[in-house]
Image (tube, rainbow, N blue to C red; front, side, top):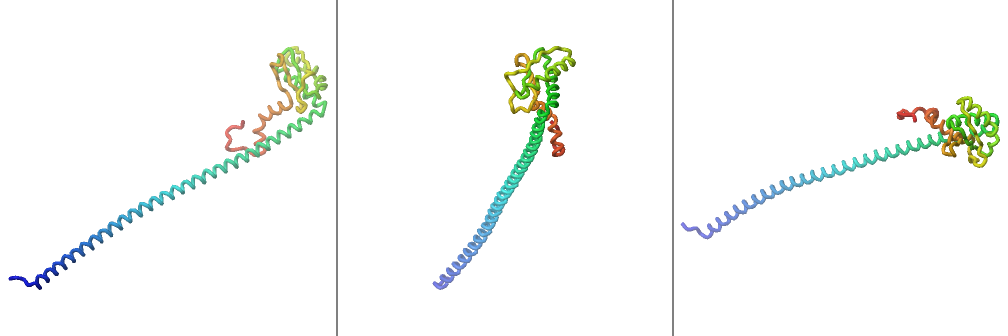
Length: 226
Protein backbone atom coordinates (compact mmCIF):
# COMPACT_ATOMS: atom_id res chain seq x y z
CA UNK A 1 0.00 0.00 0.00
CA UNK A 2 1.59 3.30 -1.02
CA UNK A 3 2.30 5.91 1.61
CA UNK A 4 0.96 9.33 1.29
CA UNK A 5 3.20 12.32 1.26
CA UNK A 6 2.05 13.19 4.75
CA UNK A 7 3.05 9.75 6.04
CA UNK A 8 6.42 9.98 4.36
CA UNK A 9 7.08 13.39 5.90
CA UNK A 10 5.96 12.07 9.25
CA UNK A 11 8.37 9.13 9.07
CA UNK A 12 11.16 11.40 7.90
CA UNK A 13 10.58 13.75 10.84
CA UNK A 14 10.46 10.75 13.18
CA UNK A 15 13.78 9.46 11.82
CA UNK A 16 15.35 12.95 12.04
CA UNK A 17 14.19 13.29 15.63
CA UNK A 18 15.67 9.88 16.44
CA UNK A 19 18.95 10.74 14.73
CA UNK A 20 19.06 14.14 16.49
CA UNK A 21 18.39 12.48 19.84
CA UNK A 22 21.14 9.92 19.19
CA UNK A 23 23.49 12.74 18.16
CA UNK A 24 22.65 14.76 21.29
CA UNK A 25 23.19 11.74 23.52
CA UNK A 26 26.47 10.98 21.78
CA UNK A 27 27.55 14.63 22.10
CA UNK A 28 26.67 14.60 25.80
CA UNK A 29 28.61 11.39 26.24
CA UNK A 30 31.62 12.89 24.45
CA UNK A 31 31.34 16.08 26.54
CA UNK A 32 31.13 14.08 29.75
CA UNK A 33 34.14 11.96 28.81
CA UNK A 34 36.08 15.03 27.75
CA UNK A 35 35.18 16.76 31.03
CA UNK A 36 36.32 13.70 32.98
CA UNK A 37 39.58 13.48 31.08
CA UNK A 38 40.09 17.22 31.49
CA UNK A 39 39.58 17.01 35.23
CA UNK A 40 41.96 14.03 35.47
CA UNK A 41 44.63 15.80 33.44
CA UNK A 42 44.10 19.02 35.37
CA UNK A 43 44.46 17.15 38.66
CA UNK A 44 47.62 15.47 37.40
CA UNK A 45 49.14 18.77 36.29
CA UNK A 46 48.14 20.49 39.53
CA UNK A 47 49.65 17.66 41.58
CA UNK A 48 52.79 17.73 39.44
CA UNK A 49 53.20 21.47 39.88
CA UNK A 50 52.44 21.18 43.60
CA UNK A 51 55.22 18.64 43.98
CA UNK A 52 57.58 20.87 42.03
CA UNK A 53 56.69 23.84 44.23
CA UNK A 54 57.15 21.74 47.39
CA UNK A 55 60.51 20.46 46.14
CA UNK A 56 61.57 24.00 45.24
CA UNK A 57 60.73 25.43 48.66
CA UNK A 58 62.14 22.38 50.43
CA UNK A 59 65.40 22.96 48.55
CA UNK A 60 65.25 26.66 49.44
CA UNK A 61 64.69 25.82 53.12
CA UNK A 62 67.70 23.49 53.08
CA UNK A 63 69.79 26.20 51.42
CA UNK A 64 68.68 28.76 54.01
CA UNK A 65 69.37 26.30 56.84
CA UNK A 66 72.81 25.51 55.41
CA UNK A 67 73.52 29.23 55.01
CA UNK A 68 72.50 29.79 58.63
CA UNK A 69 74.82 27.02 59.79
CA UNK A 70 77.70 28.40 57.73
CA UNK A 71 77.07 31.93 58.99
CA UNK A 72 76.78 30.69 62.57
CA UNK A 73 80.01 28.70 62.20
CA UNK A 74 81.80 31.71 60.71
CA UNK A 75 80.58 33.99 63.48
CA UNK A 76 81.61 31.42 66.09
CA UNK A 77 85.06 31.08 64.54
CA UNK A 78 85.43 34.86 64.38
CA UNK A 79 84.43 35.11 68.03
CA UNK A 80 86.94 32.40 68.96
CA UNK A 81 89.67 34.15 66.98
CA UNK A 82 88.85 37.43 68.74
CA UNK A 83 89.02 35.70 72.12
CA UNK A 84 92.34 34.08 71.19
CA UNK A 85 93.65 37.43 69.93
CA UNK A 86 92.67 39.17 73.17
CA UNK A 87 94.25 36.37 75.19
CA UNK A 88 97.46 36.42 73.18
CA UNK A 89 97.59 40.21 73.48
CA UNK A 90 97.15 39.88 77.24
CA UNK A 91 99.93 37.28 77.45
CA UNK A 92 102.10 39.55 75.29
CA UNK A 93 101.38 42.44 77.65
CA UNK A 94 102.41 40.27 80.59
CA UNK A 95 105.69 39.44 78.84
CA UNK A 96 106.22 43.11 77.96
CA UNK A 97 105.72 43.98 81.60
CA UNK A 98 108.27 41.29 82.50
CA UNK A 99 110.76 42.87 80.07
CA UNK A 100 110.16 46.29 81.59
CA UNK A 101 110.71 45.01 85.10
CA UNK A 102 113.70 42.98 83.93
CA UNK A 103 115.28 46.18 82.65
CA UNK A 104 115.00 47.66 86.13
CA UNK A 105 117.48 45.04 87.37
CA UNK A 106 120.29 46.85 85.53
CA UNK A 107 119.71 49.89 87.72
CA UNK A 108 121.05 47.95 90.72
CA UNK A 109 124.82 47.61 89.99
CA UNK A 110 125.43 44.94 92.61
CA UNK A 111 122.51 42.76 91.56
CA UNK A 112 123.19 43.31 87.87
CA UNK A 113 126.86 42.41 88.39
CA UNK A 114 125.82 39.08 89.90
CA UNK A 115 123.51 38.40 86.95
CA UNK A 116 126.23 39.25 84.41
CA UNK A 117 128.68 36.97 86.21
CA UNK A 118 126.19 34.10 86.01
CA UNK A 119 125.34 34.80 82.35
CA UNK A 120 129.00 34.95 81.30
CA UNK A 121 129.87 31.79 83.24
CA UNK A 122 126.94 29.92 81.74
CA UNK A 123 127.91 31.05 78.22
CA UNK A 124 131.52 29.96 78.73
CA UNK A 125 130.36 26.53 79.87
CA UNK A 126 128.21 26.23 76.76
CA UNK A 127 131.07 27.21 74.43
CA UNK A 128 133.96 25.39 76.14
CA UNK A 129 136.39 27.36 73.92
CA UNK A 130 139.88 28.59 74.73
CA UNK A 131 139.23 32.13 73.45
CA UNK A 132 135.95 33.95 73.84
CA UNK A 133 134.84 37.46 72.89
CA UNK A 134 132.22 39.15 75.09
CA UNK A 135 129.86 41.70 73.60
CA UNK A 136 127.51 43.83 75.69
CA UNK A 137 125.89 47.24 75.73
CA UNK A 138 128.26 50.17 75.70
CA UNK A 139 126.66 51.39 78.92
CA UNK A 140 127.55 48.06 80.58
CA UNK A 141 131.20 47.97 79.45
CA UNK A 142 132.66 48.84 82.83
CA UNK A 143 130.37 46.51 84.77
CA UNK A 144 131.24 43.63 82.43
CA UNK A 145 134.94 44.37 82.70
CA UNK A 146 134.63 44.32 86.50
CA UNK A 147 132.90 40.91 86.66
CA UNK A 148 135.00 39.13 84.01
CA UNK A 149 137.69 37.85 86.43
CA UNK A 150 135.08 36.36 88.75
CA UNK A 151 133.24 34.73 85.84
CA UNK A 152 136.47 33.24 84.45
CA UNK A 153 137.46 31.86 87.87
CA UNK A 154 134.01 30.38 88.34
CA UNK A 155 134.23 28.78 84.90
CA UNK A 156 137.66 27.29 85.68
CA UNK A 157 136.42 25.90 88.98
CA UNK A 158 133.52 24.15 87.27
CA UNK A 159 135.29 22.62 84.25
CA UNK A 160 139.02 22.85 85.08
CA UNK A 161 139.89 24.47 81.76
CA UNK A 162 141.60 27.78 81.01
CA UNK A 163 139.94 30.44 78.90
CA UNK A 164 140.94 33.87 77.62
CA UNK A 165 137.99 36.22 77.65
CA UNK A 166 138.12 39.58 75.89
CA UNK A 167 135.55 42.36 76.01
CA UNK A 168 134.64 43.74 72.59
CA UNK A 169 135.16 47.51 72.83
CA UNK A 170 134.35 48.25 69.19
CA UNK A 171 131.05 46.51 68.63
CA UNK A 172 128.25 46.73 71.16
CA UNK A 173 124.76 45.37 71.62
CA UNK A 174 121.99 47.85 70.68
CA UNK A 175 121.37 50.51 73.30
CA UNK A 176 117.70 49.46 73.59
CA UNK A 177 118.73 45.94 74.60
CA UNK A 178 117.59 45.27 78.17
CA UNK A 179 120.95 43.91 79.23
CA UNK A 180 123.11 40.81 79.31
CA UNK A 181 125.81 39.67 76.88
CA UNK A 182 126.58 37.75 73.70
CA UNK A 183 129.55 35.35 73.73
CA UNK A 184 131.40 34.66 70.47
CA UNK A 185 134.10 32.15 69.58
CA UNK A 186 135.88 30.90 66.47
CA UNK A 187 135.92 34.40 64.94
CA UNK A 188 132.20 34.82 65.49
CA UNK A 189 131.20 31.52 63.90
CA UNK A 190 129.92 30.26 67.25
CA UNK A 191 127.64 32.45 69.28
CA UNK A 192 125.76 32.12 72.55
CA UNK A 193 123.10 34.78 73.10
CA UNK A 194 122.77 35.37 76.81
CA UNK A 195 121.03 38.72 76.81
CA UNK A 196 118.21 39.28 79.27
CA UNK A 197 115.76 39.26 76.33
CA UNK A 198 117.00 35.91 75.05
CA UNK A 199 116.79 34.41 78.53
CA UNK A 200 113.27 35.78 78.98
CA UNK A 201 112.26 34.42 75.57
CA UNK A 202 113.58 31.00 76.50
CA UNK A 203 111.75 31.03 79.82
CA UNK A 204 108.60 32.42 78.19
CA UNK A 205 108.44 29.47 75.77
CA UNK A 206 108.35 27.17 78.77
CA UNK A 207 106.04 29.26 80.93
CA UNK A 208 103.50 30.62 78.41
CA UNK A 209 101.20 27.57 78.84
CA UNK A 210 101.31 28.07 82.61
CA UNK A 211 100.67 31.79 82.16
CA UNK A 212 97.64 31.02 79.99
CA UNK A 213 96.30 28.59 82.58
CA UNK A 214 96.86 31.12 85.36
CA UNK A 215 95.10 33.91 83.44
CA UNK A 216 92.29 32.05 81.68
CA UNK A 217 92.08 28.58 83.22
CA UNK A 218 92.80 25.28 81.56
CA UNK A 219 91.49 24.86 78.01
CA UNK A 220 89.60 21.55 78.04
CA UNK A 221 89.88 21.31 74.23
CA UNK A 222 93.68 21.52 74.25
CA UNK A 223 95.38 18.11 74.16
CA UNK A 224 98.92 19.46 74.42
CA UNK A 225 100.31 22.36 76.44
CA UNK A 226 103.12 23.42 74.09
